[in-house]
Image (cartoon, rainbow, N blue to C red; front, side, top):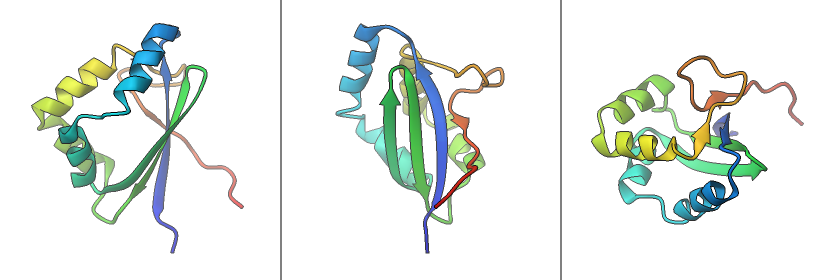
Length: 111
């Protein structure tokens, strides 16, 4: 059985120094952030970049929901600190709704 996956998109600010710093930070993500990701039911997380566009692929278990993940994030001061820090490097894609960060992508083809 295929794991449940979600694909999300976000942009980085178009600044080579910020992008380089962002990539470097992700070589050693804070341990509390990794624990929070796992606690939410995310079993795998892969991020890809082309220029300033990023795509994140999440594989999740049966306990995962975006509502549960948001509640865990909102209840964690360290996650809030991480997200505020990451926002210095990130920006929403043009189609994002106000206040939306990572945008859930719709799958339209599968082989």
